Length: 289
Image (cartoon, rainbow, N blue to C red; front, side, top):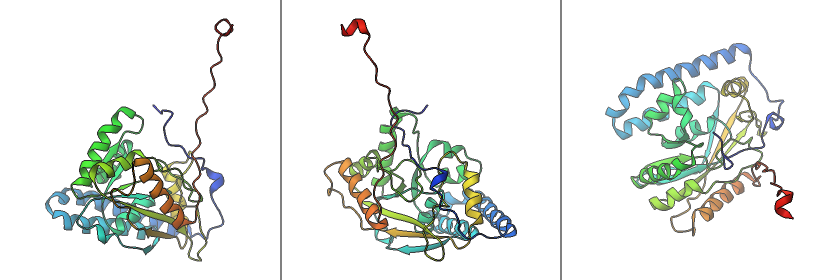
């Protein structure tokens, strides 16, 4: 059941830019078939992951995610370097626009992720995500949050990079939501830096687009089909300077620093998420007399 602190976004169909160049129906079908083949191959690779070592797993994961992006005709444009974090853990925090986000980050440097629990039950992809060592978060259950954050801090302390989306939900890309502080407590407890990454979607001519966004009440199928139709999609990935442990006094300040870094890189302003209005309770006349 949803609660009052559940992350929300004001983004919906009205945020979609429209007018992007598209490919023909035959190319769309070929892209979807290619993506299905990549997902099938990743499922077949799952039993091999425990026996091929960390380096082998990273090579396989990188190949899978690069192939998935390639199947949809997405070109990566990368600035910055994640290799500086090879020997220690780090919390990798990005703005969240599309289901393509995690594919892009892992195509550069495979890593574990914090994901909502219902992804685990997704057909095909859920099994792959779980095998990758994902830390699952039950967003509807606030009581489970401390246990999840403890698991996340242990994972970071062990030397793993973990990908998180601190906004807690997807935005269209024209604005950035507030970075929720909770996940940043795991970085503090684990004694690891935060590595912000800014994601932006462009067309081949440099025009920014919101078409890849997964927003509003649409299904994942709606978003996948819209991406499959796009011609010349570019996913710009900016790896920003790390925020060292101890630079922030607490998790709220750490979240604000990461949010500001992403906003600065994108030239954005933070748009506060819509809050649910609570109807004021009027006192009974007999009690106010």
